[in-house]
Image (tube, rainbow, N blue to C red; front, side, top):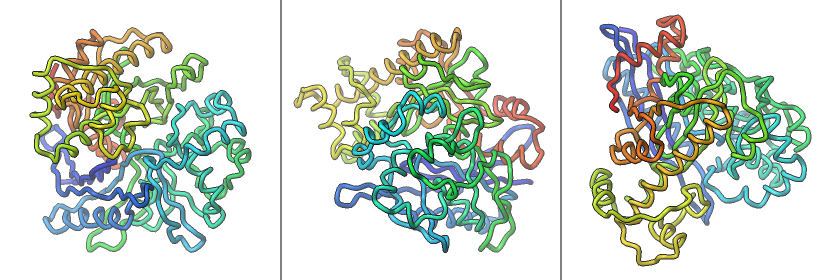
Length: 450
């Protein structure tokens, strides 16, 4: 049996999932799970990378202990965040999280150096205060960048800690707002204008290629590149076709379509769409919305008294809702999500069940608006929406999405991100000859509902 290990790390939890092919189907087995690596100190948010790397290694060790040693390993994480190394390849801490508010202070300053119109014409990436470009500019102003010799986005950094090899993977790098959408490499002109040294970046490497040999374990394995941005891995496992839209539903909801080339039009810029890199140089034309993050925080505020299913049923029974902008900065990192939503609506006494139902309806409404924009800007007639990821298990949100969009909604696979990560490893190992062949097996392997 040939095993592959997907290390799938989201903004709130991570998993080690073994994958293998048996009887013509892809099989998955969760080996290890971990969480709690986001830290807050004096109002600043940063990643506990020592804990993160330690958990990654613990999960790999567990594979050896149970006798299921992976032939290959690949990592995917959220986008935009990074770790800087000095000339001795030592970390320059802290590794600040995208949830930190520091970038708000430099948005206008960066915009004066390079306008959003020019930036979009080069990178095709939507404007968001947490984009890497703004984070790096903060590090330049603080002097942190002067000490830096290497730039590694989060999955690149973890791969480095496993192999000692430094590489920048394409799909993750594309989230930085520093990759030229046409050349598919770092944009020297943008870096020069911002005074950021291009030498800290490695040439981008593609998914399904090798990083290096695993070091420090009692078994041999090869670390390879998945589409290391988690959404890129999730989309790799989707087969939406030319008239389909995917929603990768997790901490964030990523709503988009797959295109062979970037859409850099004025309409796309005004609608704030992004053109992130995908497997086989396909472009993910999409928008980001806060997704399960809202529910995760509401549940936390309720001291986890209710399960997600119980919260869903509370919302359905309430029958009342208000609309919120789910992407409002108020909801990025509030001390209390329930209070933040009540304050946003100006209704401090709003019942909890109505707060939850408001999130449901607001998300479905946002999905509908994005689908309409995709149809208009991309000249596509969307027929199907494929919801994948953990959020695809939420029957009420799927039902509302169908209601608001008036499209056929297909839910699943749940483990799309890990599956996309794994099929990229199988492509590296020549178990599939093409992405199309891999996607066909994904469709055979996992149940979907409509």
